[in-house]
Length: 343
Image (tube, rainbow, N blue to C red; front, top):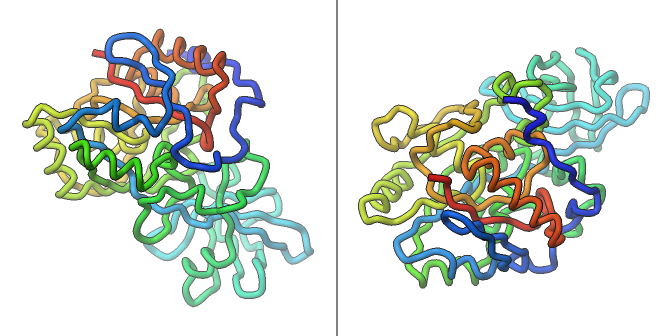
């Protein structure tokens, strides 16, 4: 299928440049099971689910991954940390890439120095980097700033707004699982009181998630690899929800990719960890997810293709047209939609 089939016109003024004052004040476009649209607020989410449903979230924590430094000639170089390899080296994006040839050294503040070891074959501007510090992860967290997407042109007043309220563990992601940014303690409490279950998994988000599909055919898109972990407790909660007749609601496309990766063997949902490069496009057979809570995505992105596979071509187009007409806020810091899988 053609990547051009997943294009649409997104005016710049529809791209949210900052979060709302209150996380759960976001608007929510509800795509009803079968057909129909409802304009809601995110705070109404507990009313849209039913007792026995299960929300599954990605609890990854975002690294303060954007580093500003200078090369040996005093020129500005920016590094964006994507992932740490098992050998202690890091995969990063460098800008401008021409200043980050192998052997180049970038000084970041007074206490952190980066040496370019090699050129990545998987990312434009990608570099393999060695950081000179006793604890590189801690030094990156100290020196870095929130890695906002390039279509957001202002720094956040509060960097925690690019972090979900339930993020846990060490910071490993280069981007936030943005569907989860809307949740607040009061909404989560109302969900619990309403008998809606809560379970978590982990997928460390890389910037490739937001990369546009540049190939003419969607199937030729080189999908990036991301690390994931599906815990035993979450797999068990999903299986119990299924037995009890409840529905599995994925909070974000990252959750969909993990659950569908783990369900592809046809033996039920098995707890496991590893990396996934699963590209979900129309024709994909979903085995694990019944509903998807997600933000509005960029044209020609793998995220939009996943949405089209989940709800169908006609439904995503009509939903996006409605959202644009009704002035919903798009992309990472924008509003969201709750949609049910096309049967």
